[in-house]
Amino acid sequence: MLLWYVALFFIALVLGFFQVSVFLSFMVIAVYIVLTFPLVTPLFWSKDTNKMMKYIKKSHNEYFKFLYRFLNGDLNEAETIASSMKKGKMRDIARVMLLIKNEQFSKARELLEPMKDSTFKYYYLAASAQGEGKFEDYQSYKNRVKDQDYRKWLEIEELVRAGKKTEAGGILEAHIAKLRGTKLLSAVHFRSELKYR
Image (cartoon, rainbow, N blue to C red; front, side, top):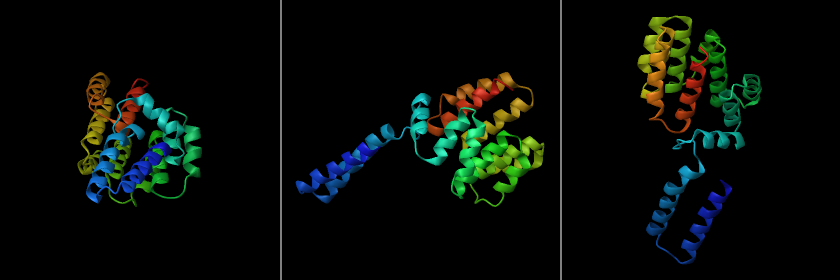
């Protein structure tokens, strides 16, 4: 990532040295960013889960460290990292993920309720209501989830809980083919968990 910034600085320096117009300089830098950013940060567009896992493993970002441990099933280490994170939204997200994973739905709801309205909030509120068997709450929260991928995962979980694991697996496989980035990592993790349920 550092080399990416160095290259960006060098391009800007060369453009300034040759006194290229502001508009052309802006266009060259914009093209550079658009073409190279997905290569440097694979979490946005990549379909290569190994590359994304290597990226989050090497990352110095606390949330990515947590996510790497969480996705690899090392929940004790993930919990340690989550508790050492600075207070804020990312720490709360990490804690909610752990609570849902450990089926502590009421504690997860306590953390989620005061959060600002977002897809994440309603997705996990729906998941916790589903886990507690509160069907009306589940439907209410599910209807507030705007992201179609998250809604699809809730529907797949419904099928699993209804005993239609094979059908759910087929739908998940078809859905995985369409995903990229962190959503792909989440779906692959969901698929691996589905095998043991």
